Length: 286
Image (tube, rainbow, N blue to C red; front, top):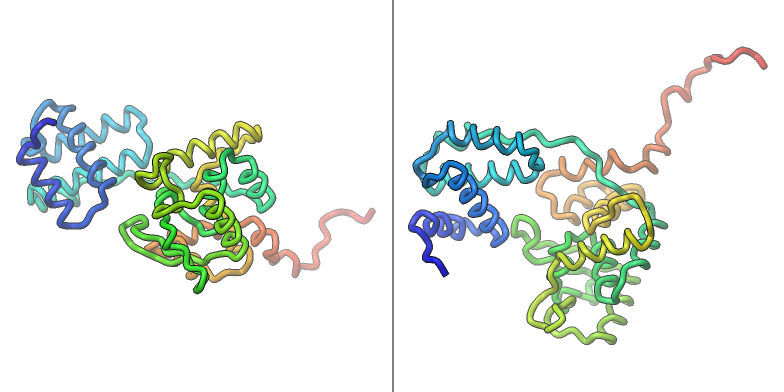
């Protein structure tokens, strides 16, 4: 294994002190390394003009909005924190997020999709993801002890941003989990790897979704996050306060949660148009 350079070690220490997740640390290191390779120079010898040139390069390569902003976050951290060049981060601009509404399944579509998932473990894990509004990583890392049947809640540890939260434990889901436990007898991790050495890889759930879509022959691109979107939208349509949905999803900002108000077609259909109050004759008498 190659020895870490002092600069990379310093950046890793800076990220560790700030309690950035391992995934975030890997992402930041990856993007700073790519930036350095692009100019074939150590990143501490580069500045704003090189950052700007690199951003233009990424845009020309049509990288996704998410990847572009991950690179921006990494470079802002590297220059602002590791190098202490506090003048630079604010000058490195983020890309504007594209305004796209998430795909949402109807209740019947959720049932059909979950029943099409291959493998008991995958099916139960994805059912749990929908029933509790979990991300793929959150569902895959659940422990047996996170299921609190006495208080009917599920503890979600180290969700996005490193925060813990509690979500509801649906009674039907509890029965499913009990049946799953009797069948598989998981020890520490609720959904362990095959060899039991740790939690399942969340990529397994992404693949399971893709296979289920192919089996059903549906055109919608259904992912684990689609189930989470559907969970939130169905709660909203059932009249759940949006601030409660925010807590359940683990959103820091209410603005992230209000997106579901735009995709709730049931609520849109129940909204009374002001036109209903008008007495206007548009069509000629029949």
